[in-house]
Every structure is written in structure tokens, then in C-alpha cells.
Amino acid sequence: MNEKDWIEEVSGKSWEDRAVGPDTYDCWGLVVDFYRRVKGFEIENIAGYVNGETGINQGFKERGEGWQPSELGYVAVCFDGDNANHVGVRIGSRVIHAFGGVKRDGQVFNHTLSQFNRIYRGNVKYFDYIERV
Image: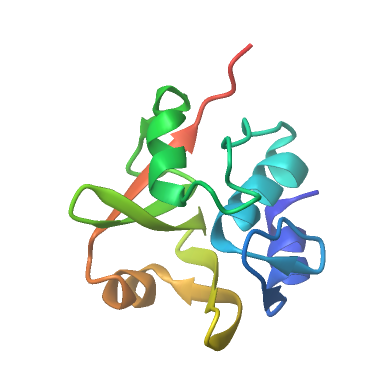
């Protein structure tokens, strides 16, 4: 699947905690889906993420060896201090990300880089995931 088709398919889908598609997503699930269907490989599972024992921050740190900082990276990671608290997929000048919560409905959004950076107060770094062979 190409990037454009993937964006069209996922944009506007519903947010659901710990969901990895194809009908609902959370932010991490959207990144996993992108790498699976567009890049053609699996990102290693984060132990305990699906059942809620582990969050994005712990998972991102556990998988740190696969993540490489990159100004043009596909993965936008939002930080609160040193803690990763949200992720999205950067494609060109857009960031596709799933956002919601227990007390509010959410969905997959398609924001410009400037909108995304404004929402997350500029505490965003970009990474690529390097497949281990």
C-alpha cells in the first residue's frame, strides 16, 4: 500500500485505546499499522502494551535501539520532559495521529506539521524505525 492510500484509508477512523486497526486505532497502533502495511515490516511488540500494563514511554525506551533520530523521520514522538507520551506518522508536511481518551471520543487526525507542533507545544522529535534482521 502506498502512503497516500494509507492516509485516505485511516483518516477519520475512530480512536480506541490499544487498538491496532483496521477499524479503530490508538496512536501507537497507527504507527504499527503504517509500518506493517506501508513499509512492509513489523515493529517489535511492546511487552504489556496491548493489555495496558505498559505505556508508550516505557515501550519507546525499551525499543530504543530500533529508533533512529531523523529530521525527516516517519515517526513524530511527543515528549513531556524526557517522557514520550504520544506518537504519530509523519508523511511529508503532514502528521497522521490517533488521539482520544476515556472521557472523550477521538479519531485519526491529519494535521499539518505546524498544527501538530502547536498542539504539542513544539516538544516533538522525529525518528525512523530501523528493521532489525
